Image: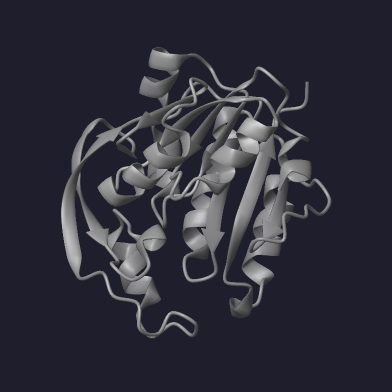
Length: 220
């Protein structure tokens, strides 16, 4: 993980971790010497992040979701698998009857605050890298970004390929020209390619690939 992110992050850089969950990426970013804005709306996961990083002056926890506009929204909570709790009803609908998603249940809900990436930029400064992992709400999150960092990543799933395509299209509008991807938790990138080539790759993935992260960068 550190080797992967070291391609984008240097000591002293500012990084936004959107959907920080239990902090595995926060820990990697800190090992690389970055200052981290960790964004996580779920109270239970925020408690975990406070236990892990509460004494680290270089980690700022923002207890909020990220969307296209500021406000509040209903988060659907998966009690047995909280890292796939979501603001997206479409994400839940896509998971129904999908192979590999059997037994997942979003049986609770919680009203959470929603902010935007631009609001975070205004509050904390422009980051070098942004990681977005928000369970089917990635395109909405990128709608709230108009000040693109040099590089970013967003999660994709094979149950919602259209969301990944929408994110790619938004990245092109923001000025990104080079794209790559890592399947699952492989932490391994392939070749850099155009948005259209990456979209073709995503469409052609087998369902069993399940998920991963797409990376976008603006060459220096």
